[in-house]
Image (cartoon, rainbow, N blue to C red; front, side):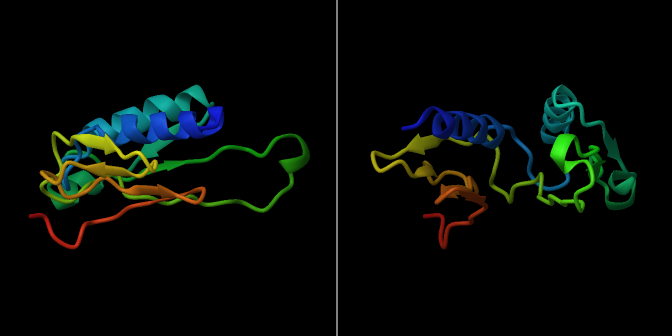
Amino acid sequence: MKVNDKRVIDRFIELALIDGESFNERLVADYLITEFEKLGVQLCEDDTATKIGGNCGNLYGFAEGRGKYADSEPVLFCAHMDTVAPGNNKKIIINDDGTIVSDHTTLNIGTIEGGSVTNAVPENRN
């Protein structure tokens, strides 16, 4: 495993282990706010929580381009902070082939494959 691969996998696992079922994503939001602040990106939170009965709103941030990217077109990143139930107290298993899965007591871990990160919900949860 390359050093950068390990860094991505470690961050993925750290984030995946945070409990954040729908309407209860506060811990995930707080983690993201802290990590983005380290990068110099101030995140703002809207009032969606009060409208939907959740404990956190949507996060928005903006970072000015720097150096050769100062005049570049904007790039948007969009992702869910929540996981579907049952999604708390996740147990993560890293298989010998490098795939990352749950122990099947929870529904949602996500996947890292071919340089991209996607969210995945297993077909069944037996």
